[in-house]
Each structure stands twice: as structure tokens, then as C-alpha cells.
Picture 1 (cartoon, helix red, strand yellow):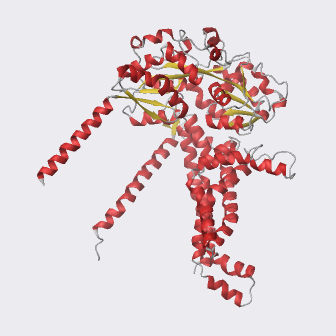
Picture 2 (spheres, chains in turn purple, orange):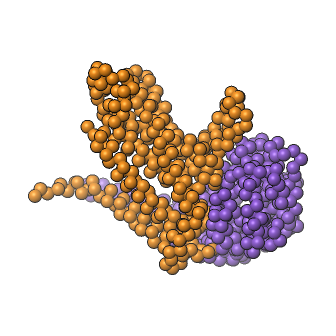
Picture 3 (tube, chains in turn brown, cyan):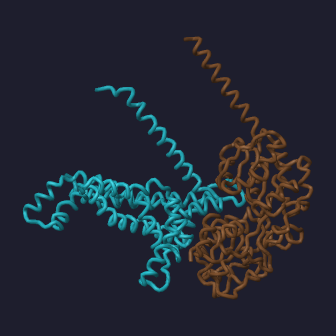
Length: 342
Length: 284
């Protein structure tokens, strides 16, 4: 009997040790689910495993859900986190990201300045939020040369905006009112004048894609990557780049505070910023490279909303991510009370 | 005095631990509701009652009204549609028909609320199934606006709550001895009168239980009002999500949750009081 107990204990201990050894050999990456996780795995994860022999394990979830988990967990559940630039500031402000040692990410030397976000997080790809529309479902001859065209009376009841983040349309309204995101209040009346044209507010990327694919909302302020995805699915969508500039978005990565595999995380980040991987990201998901030395397929580079030159990056409407992190709640509350409530 | 067997305590332990966990969670939400929001941070500030004061704004009052209105309409229409189905399920003697009704009634339970709601987006859209059918039949000239309206949300919510309502009503109806109806019929009552004066009153406990469940369930519904309402039909649940998870304003989202919880308790208590007499009528 005693022999059996000892054998069982030894077996359990060895299994536990093996499990721990496996955990030590993995880099845990926190990311969004769906196509974004697939993109990271395909473009970066596989190359990382090829170069280091270390497997990558993904923890997936929504941007805010993962932020909450990181805050509540105390100890780092992941080694590296992908998030949006302004949410990265929340990780940074709450000391959930390590301060980066840039000497360990040599490829970051080629980052565009818009992707140098904070001492703790840097960009991994760029995109724009701009006007996406169904040419077959909007009044004939209608063009979107300026953001002001969204306010045209003939677009009454056709427009959808993201419901979780009004920062794009708030920045646009401020710009059209001669101001900027920091002094966004000057655009309040302009934004209120858009209410008759707003048909709905979409909840997530899938909802955005469904509403434009079914024609329910033939005009959207939408993520360029979503529009390209729908075009590939055969939906007749056009992306317009207004003369004031499309609203820039940058997705970012940072190393979680307390990560036991920080060196591996640095390697992962460096691979992510290599010109080859950046070109691959552009090819797979139409994410704009954040480094200046990536060679993007010319057919992809010429797509509206792709940012492949510093001039194109500079022509975007860039809301300071730190300001966005600070103002998000205020903007969202004002938007709920004054725009969505009508 | 008899001693309670020790194993009974073991049976009680899981529910007691769950209750403690839920209480701690509720106290945490309560604690958040009286703390100040700190812009740009997940940490909360000091004590404040401003979050509750903000709830008096028209948007939030409208959200409370919408939530109660949606819950009431869903429970009512759900009852009207579920009762005949439950009645047929209990009374039919044909095996295959009983099985068919049961399968139709409970199959939606196996699909998630999100899947069911996405299906309704396809059905209710301007070029969706319903509008296409009505246009083809010449009933309407232009598509009806069902998406992003209360009507659309109620339609989808009725579908979400119907399986549970059918099961609860069927349980209540199955306890009514068919001999009562036969007795009424033999004394000269027609089928309608027998139903209205015998079956319906006796099924009141089931009706009350299903109405209360549907009301409470709809009160906290999130995915359906969020997706079908498209931000145009604000409810307490959708606002809590938007404020907490989009804006990270957890204190205000917590205040909204606490107010919603208080309102639910008040409404369900009122409903229980109102239906107490009905329960007595139905009891047998």
C-alpha cells in the first residue's frame, strides 16, 4: 500500500514538473481573437518559433476584457500584450507594462514617429478609420472628398458609427470646426448636426461588417482592414480618404510587468518589426507597416488607407493616444448623452 | 431536539460558498458606485455620490423606461405566443406532434443568444427575409424599419424567452387534471367557456411564474438590445457595458448597475404583490 502511495506521489510530482517545464518553454501572448490572432500567429508567431524553437501560446479576448484581467490578476498572465495605442497608455499608466529597453529591439530604429507611443509600448501595424460606403446604395454621383460630405442631407438615415469609441468622429467634428481633439468641445454643435444621418451604432467589427454587407447602413466610419476583408468576400465597398485625412489608428505591443520571459518577448517584438514580417502583415491583413524599411507589394501599397511612406503617415488625422486614453470616458459619456440618445 | 445529519451540511456548503462569492461581488459593485472616476486610469478616486446624481439625466431615465417597457412587452407577447404552444404540448395525445412541438419549443435554447440575435438581424433588415416577403406579397411598398427600433428588439427578445416560457407554462398546465374540463363540458359549457372558466384560472400560477421569469430575464438582456437596437434603443444593460467596458468608467457603470438592481427588486416585489391573489385563485 505504502509503495503504491509513494509511486503515485512520484508520478504526480514528475507530471507537475513536466508541466512546469512546458510552461517555461512557452511565450504567452495576449491578443484579440479571430483574424487578428491568426495574423499574429501566421506573420510573427511562426517565425518566432522557427528562430527560437519556443512555442507561442495565445490568450485571446476583447481589448478591455484583457486590460481588466491584467489589472485584477496582479501577477502577469501573459508575457507580451497586443492592444490599441491608447489602451496601451492605460497599461502604462497603471504600471502593467515594463519600460522597454530599446537596445533589445534593433528593428525599432526604423519606426515611424507615430508608432513610438510611450516608454512602455510601441506600434506593430497601422490602419485608418475612414469613410467606407456601398456605391450601389448611396445616391448616384455622391463622393466623399471631405469628411464634411457625411453631413449631406441626402445621406439621411444611412450612416453607422462605432458605438464603443466616438473619438474618430469627435476629432473629425473638431477639425471641421477649426479645432482639434484636445479642444473637442468646439465641434460639439457640428457633431449634433450629424444626428439625422446616423442610422445606428455598431458594436464590434463583425457587426460593422454585417451591417454594411446587408446594406442596412450603406455608409460607415469604419476600420480600413474590415473594409478590405469585406471586399475580399465580394461585397461592393469603396473606401474614401477625405482631404482632411483619415483617422489614424495604431495597434501596439508591450511587455507585461513581471514577465518571466522578457528576453523572449523582446525577440518576438524585434521579429514583429522586421521588414519581412511587416510586409507580410500588409499582405495578409492590410495592416500598414510601422517601419520605414518594409517593402510592401505595390498592389497592396496603392490601396486607399495603406500607409507606406512617411508622407502618408503624416497626412492622417492623428489623435494623440495619451490624450485619447485620458479623454475616452468623457467623450464616450458626452456621445451617449448627446448623440446616441437622439 | 433532533441533530441534523452531517452530510446535509456538505450539501449546503456549495450553495453557501456561492452565496458568499456573489455577496462579495455585489458589495464590490456597490463600493465602486460611490467612488470617483479617475480619467486615464483604471484606479478609482475617493468617495462621491455624483455618479447617482448623474443618473437623473434624461438619457439614463430613458434607458430605465426602455428597459421596463421592453421587459413588459416581451413578457406579455411571449405569454400570448407561448401559452397556445404549451397548451398544445400538454393536451395533444399524438406522440409525434408532442415531440415536434417540444423540439420546436426548446431547440432555440441550444443556440446562444448571440447566434439567435444575428439570425434576427438577417430576418429584420431592410432587405431581410420579412421585408422581402411582405414586399413580394404586395403588403408594403417600402421596407419596414424594424432594425434599430423597440419593435425589432421586442420581436427578437420574445423569441429568446419563448422556450423557457413554454416549458414553465407546460409544467403548470400539466398539473391540471383534464377531468375538470370534461366536467365543465358535461355540465353544458362550450370549449371556450370551459377553457376560460376552468383551465385558464387554474394555470395562473404557471402564467405568473413565466411572466416573472421573462420579465426578469429581459431586464438584464444584453446581446439582443445591443445588436438589434444598434445603439438607438438604450437599456440599463447596454449602458453599463458601454460605460464600463468602452469608457472604463467603472464607478458610473457600477452606479447604473446598483440602480438597475434596486429597480428590478422593486418591480418584482410589486409584481409578486399584484399577483398574490391570482396565485390563490390558481392554487389547487
